[in-house]
Image (cartoon, rainbow, N blue to C red; front, top):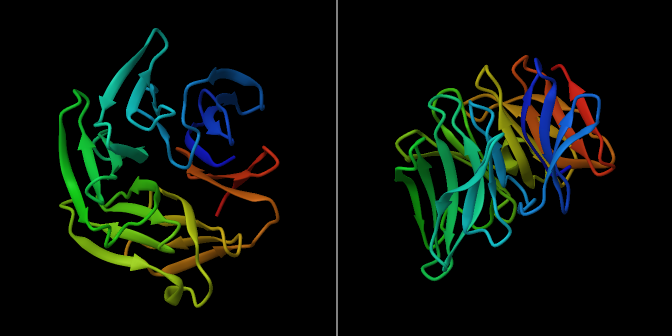
Length: 244
C-alpha cells in the first residue's frame, strides 16, 4: 500500500493503491471499485470535499476527476512536463499539484481551484529544493509540505510559497529518507521514513514530537481520518490503524 488518499469514518471507505492498482475499499476490506488507468505511484491521487476522486493518469500529464456518474479530464499539462504528486487543501478544497518541467529542469507547485483556474505557488529553478518530490500535503496553518526521497528531506513552504525550513536527518539524529506524508487536524506533520521504517510526528515548525515504533513490511502510504486515526499501509496489502 504505497498511498492512502482519504478515509471517512461514517461511510467507512477509503482509496488506496498498490504497485499497479487503485481501489476503493470498505473498512471491512471488501473492494468497492477499481480504477484501471491510474498512475498508482506515490501521492498520485486525492479525494475532494464532495468525495470525487482525482487521480493522475499513467503518462503523468492528465489529472482526471471521477464522480459517481462520470470521469472527466480536470487538468492537462504540456508534453515536456510530468505530474509528480497531488493533494487536496484541507483549508480551501483546492487541488495542489507538483509538476516537473523536464526540459527546463524546474519543479513547481501549482494550486487549482474548483473551476480549474491555476496559479503557481512555488517555482524551484534548477531543482535546488526538489529533486524527486514524491508526496505533498497542506497543513492546517496553510503550509505546503513536500517529501523528497532523493534529497532525503521534507521541504516546507508557507502559503505564499516562501521556503520555511527542511526536515532532514539532523533533526532526528538518524538516517532519514522521507516518503509518505500527511498532516492531522492539530497541525502535526506525519512522515514515514523508508530508511528506518519509523513513523515520525513533527509539529508545524518541524520539531520532533513523537516516534512510532518501527514495524517490518511497512509501506509508504499514510492518511489521517476525520476522527484523527492514523492509517498506515503495509507491503502485505494490509492497513494498520493507530491512535496516537
